[in-house]
Length: 486
Image (cartoon, rainbow, N blue to C red; front, side, top):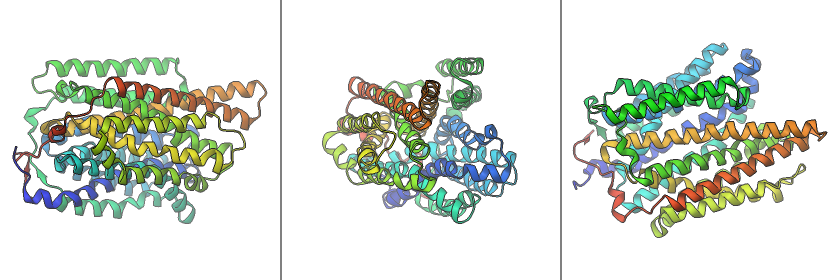
């Protein structure tokens, strides 16, 4: 195997900082908007239904384009895709901050999702080609995961501060200096890639099928809360989305130059880790979203207070990801660490199933914030296992696939758990329960379902996933062909 170039060795850690900054910016952007939604609605005159599109437009573009962007990164060069994505995201952020009406903001949010998909789809592919030694890769994934894990809570706090101190426009304008700095640093820090060429996977038909199928599927999921599970809207569009994705798979099995060579799904760790990730993130979004709703609607916390109350969780996840996970992964293996982390998350969800109407933060919520540190073990371990079978030419595709299942898990978690909680709350209200008691009963059901999802993730991990061989950290080597001196 060819040794990495000196240029690559010198640029690895600054490159990790750039990749982590982009991950942080993307995750923060996904949560910072939620705090400012009431102010945006008042200022721009959104209808209640239209307001949801400030979130949905981003999610649909982001989740729908990740797989395509990841493969295009392999074909044209991951550095080029990363830089282009950051440029689109930064420009779209300025457009969103300058929005004067609902249509302009929704269009800008869609473009933000496009840019986020382009940049995020290739970050893991770049990371695993830069860090090939087992311990260094574990450390790099720990740093990368800690920034993403902390991003959601940071976004909630930052959104509250900026909206209260200035106005909602600044939750978007703040991305301009961050984006420009990231682009400037990435030009020097990231190694240049030539890519393997469009001829290796220029499947336009496959691209249309997978992008339309994913976008339609995510749209269907995020609208379940409005239409219901058995509505014609949900069943019809869901069936069409599945048909488009099935046609894409069939196309990839026969295409001369497939967009997604099906060999990427053959290693059990690849498909097993992606399945476990869908289950885990569906459950973890119960914590991120449902706990925040519980604190605001039942306990009466404000937006900023909610963000501050959840900071211990962000600190716990980030600290474990950054300082503990790499050592444990190296000593005990990613599979064992994943099982331990899932057990901690299961304990957190189990604790929440008994949450009372009049909860005390220290005794009823703080233990959950500490147990959720298991996420700091789970996310790096899943990343290690999910990327362990990827080859150099498929690293961007594997990264895009891994990020796609993240979005599917989060979107499905919000749709399923929110809908079940709302249904349970409505039933309790009709039975004469107080609003606070009915809401709490609905949230408890959501936490119970989340616990069941974590049990399923534990089962998949135990039965399917295997500890990679010590040499498999080299499965994505830095080859002399894709990289050249910048």
